[in-house]
Image (cartoon, rainbow, N blue to C red; front, side):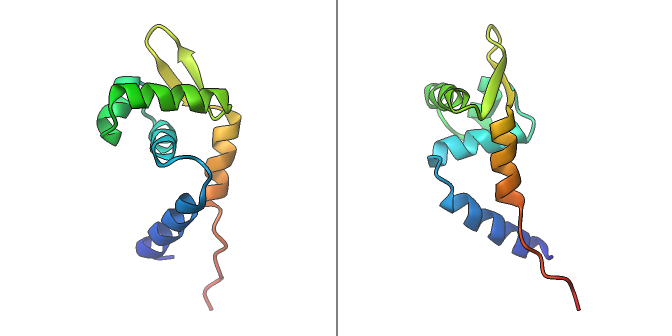
Length: 96
């Protein structure tokens, strides 16, 4: 699979996901390894307040979990890992 095929398939799947665009950005940022709320806000170009709201929403959904309430650090929870697994689960036809 070429990179453009991968990107198009991923973006198509992402667009069909039920999460809001802001929640999807935050979830992907956490999946990419960003744990700190301020880093997530900076990298997604979301305001800190929107980022906080989305992190709390994702936490309520069980998609992320807060590992440090004082520092406001988050990691993927099992439901978030499963959502991302579905987003990246492309049916790839064998080369032939």
